[in-house]
Length: 115
Length: 110
Image (tube, rainbow over all chains, first blue to last red; front, top):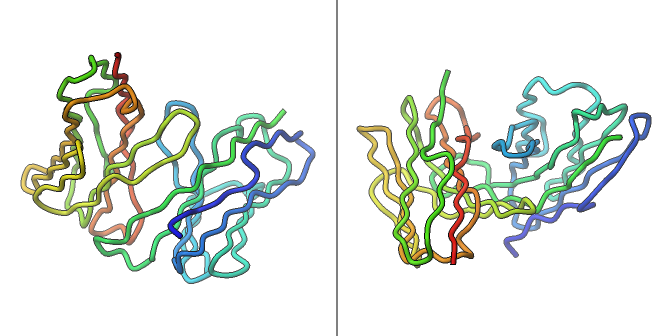
């Protein structure tokens, strides 16, 4: 199983809503990533979890809150978002040791629209 | 600032043409990743390399460490190759994370 799954595929939410994005992998990977991608731009790294601990937070606003309940799951909790947060949110995972074969596997993304 | 550049930004080709996409970076890397993103968002890993050349089907990736440059070649291009191709590098001093290039948008016309 070399798949990273993300739910939901699409999400529309108001600025006062609280919602969560979910990501799951069963490849035994120990590093998991959240990226944000705006239209016609490359992915921007948001968070990295390594061995279930938050290792990188790229100065992301606190209205985005990541959570890694176990090594297979990664959540992104959303609260009080702004319309400019509308984007494709991508999850990825990798073995986590940083070597040449440490390829990142990407999920299909959640397309988020904030009204 | 460690930056990744790609050229061209956009590329339109006729079916069957040989295509080259270029990537250049500024400082030493431990690995370079070529990714493909189709409309709708899904990203697929094509190659990861740190030296020499790799081939998979009609795709060939090369890297020149001294010149800090990599190329992705597509032989006998097909409309299904239409996608955004992204180069991402793992810098030697940046742990396990990648820095992404801006992408090259390829359209292959039948």
